[in-house]
Amino acid sequence: EDDNSKFWAAYKKVSTEYDHDFLGRANDDMGIILTFAGLFSAVNSTFIVGMQPDPGETTNDLLLQLIRINVNGPNSVDISNLSSSTGYPSSTVWMQALAYASLAFSVLAAFGAVLGKQW
Image (tube, rainbow, N blue to C red; front, side, top):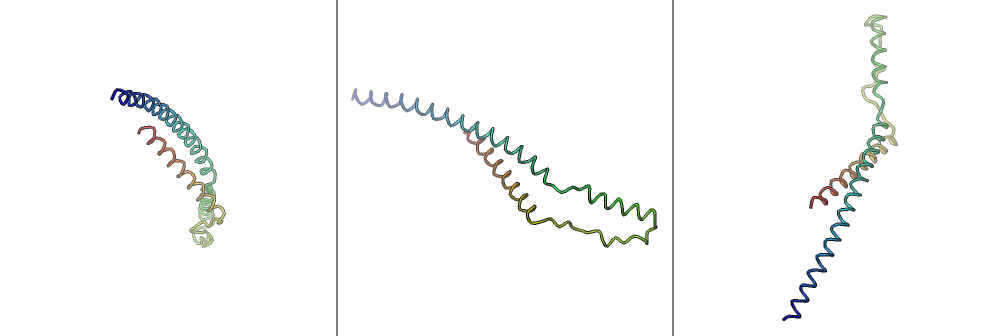
């Protein structure tokens, strides 16, 4: 029985050291993932903002129509050429969809890293 207790004491010592080292490495890895996901999300958000259509064009068109109404009178301006919706090329839609999906996965990875660090 003395050999048995020595075995379990040695096992507890070795397993505690292994667990401590393992948790330290995992905590460091989660910190790295969290940092990378945060930086990637910031850069990705910048690209998403850069890909947004320019709302100034619609504003300029509407202001031009208002100026024409003021100068020529209300009956002289045809507003049928103003489009009610803006059509975007399918490549732009796909690029934005991929950028938003990438941002969502990056935020999900950061959330997982935070949960892993708190666990």
